[in-house]
Length: 237
Image (cartoon, one colour):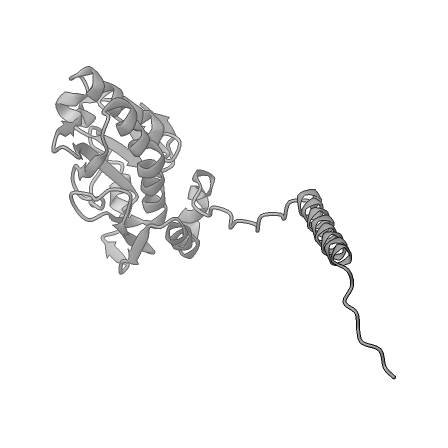
């Protein structure tokens, strides 16, 4: 005759539970040690920044690469139709800078390399200089005339054509701050201490992106604006 099944004594059940709990604890500790001891997972490679100062000369020759770099950096451009005005004026492969770090008082239509240099200058020079010297951001950049103009260099008697005649230069007349305050090159260059410091910072900082940077320190023809261009002459005054 079959015997009845006898359950294990209470102390046996308790011992089994303790053994199982201990095994789970050991397993958890082993897993934790494996996780802690595992080398950190490498970060996925980041896409290299395409918009860099050292590429501006390249952008003068390669407008598609220039536009791609601006797009990657969050700026926007629109292509402009080529223009030929007489034997010495006009442009090809130009763009309008439609979205930038700061709005402008008028259209910024010129060579893509000029747009790239302006974008870098705004982001890396104007914004930090405003925070440091003025304690608030710039709300708008005031142009002093059109980017493209079929004319000679101002203040010269040899009638050499300006880089504006190739849409390769920009003149900055001043800045509007977030609180509505206006800082003009004319007046501010020798005005309040904070205005002087800011204007000289944005002038000097521009020299890292443009070939020629001219200010009121250069001559009387530039008493009311900062001139930036990507021509053949290297100047920072």
